[in-house]
Length: 80
Image (cartoon, rainbow, N blue to C red; front, side, top):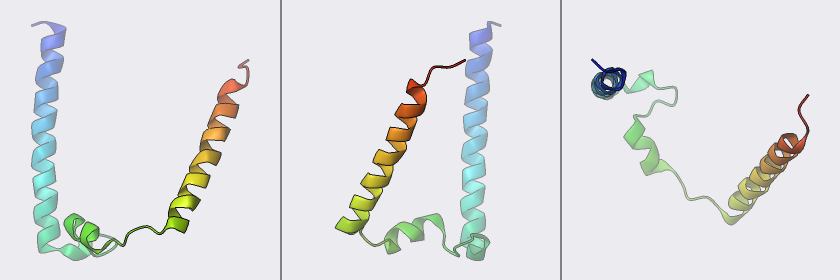
């Protein structure tokens, strides 16, 4: 069997296993919602999330700009 075919089959098997694990996690969380640190199942959290204020968005933008500036600065430094 060709190497690329083996990789394709391994990927398919991994995806199938991941889907089974995800289903099992959802089943467990439905039966035991307290297992999550916040006490909510994944679908419950999005429903209770409040919209972000303009000030919050500005703060996030400012912090991200700082992170990108540090990243660009570090990337521009010559490597030894």
